[in-house]
Structures are given as C-alpha cells and as structure tokens.
Length: 220
Image 1: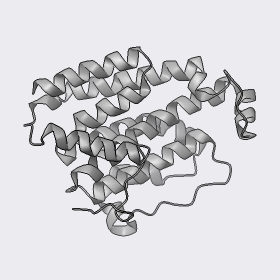
Image 2 (image 1 turned 90 degrees about the vertical axis):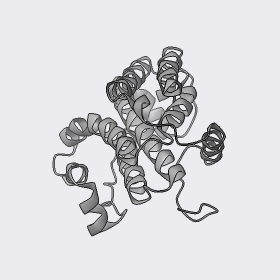
Image 3 (image 1 turned 60 degrees about the vertical axis):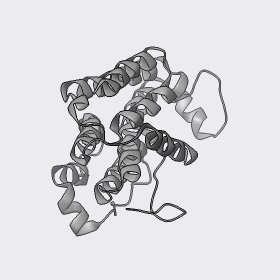
Image 4 (image 1 turned 180 degrees about the vertical axis):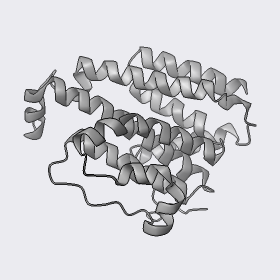
C-alpha cells in the first residue's frame, strides 16, 4: 500500500523537474501488478482527453470513439487492426492512433503482466505525446516545418517547446490525480519488487514501446 502512495508522490516530483523519463518509469512501477481493469481504465482516461481535439480536426473519422466505447467488441470484430491513417496525419494524430494500438495489445493480453503494463503505459505516454505535439504544432508552425526536414534545430523541437512542456506537466498531473482518486494503493501487492524492476528493464530495452509477442517475448 505505502509503496504505490510513495510512487505517486514521486511521479509529481519527477513532473515538477521535467524528468519525463522518471515519470515513465514511475508509471510502470505503479501499474505493474494492478488489476487489468484498472490499468486499462487509466489508459482509456488519458486517451479520451485528446479525443475531442482529434474529432474536431477529423470530423469524418468515427472509429476512435467507437473503439473506446466497446473495446472487447472491437477486438472480437477486428482484432488489433486499425483503419489506415490519412496521408496528412500530423505527429499529434499519429501519436494518438498509436495509443489505440497499445490499448488493444494490452486488452488482448490482459493475463500477461509485462505485456499488459508496458502496453498500458505506452498508451498513456503516446496520448500525452499527442497532446504536447498538438500544442507545439499550433505554437510553432515554422519549427514543425523544420522538424519535417529531419534536421535538428535547437530550441524548435517539441521537447523544447514551452507550451508543450506546460501541457506535459498538466497531463502528468492528471495521471497522478487519477491514480490518487482511484486509490490504486488499496490493491494488494502481489508482485515481488525484483519482478517489477526486471520487467521495467526489459521494457526499457525495447525503448519503452510495444512488447508484441514474438521476437523473444512470450505471452502468458
């Protein structure tokens, strides 16, 4: 119980320091061992925060809301398949759609602690990235064009954008508030700390992206 409470407090500290890597690692540690329903609920909560922005930009695209309304039905009918992206998706749109890929993977492998947690965490990270990319795109159109040329221009990327940093702070605060409101620490600690750290190390080896079964990863 105390461990998760302390981790949520640590999450806020990392957020205040703009230590986004620390935020990611803490989130993984908090989620690992929680019921699948709780982990999926958090991922869905963060994804939904970007949904109105996406729907405003792409009013003809209806599948995200449909998928979120009934994840099980989507998996039954479509598996992990998602509709093809329009060619003119921007970085925020692409990050948003990636969060759905992660959410579906987590839902499909709910009994595998590592795939479940890494996927839910990846969904949260990608949804937050969609929010901050969206603000960066709106605030620095010239910087976005520079980014599109695949060069490096100090001070003009999303990681250095002040509005994007402010949005990242706010979104991590929302994550911490959700974890607090849900009192995630009331759930029994059923996983040994060594297993959590081992799982985190494996996820980091995969650059904190999706851990799809195969390629050395066995689903349970």
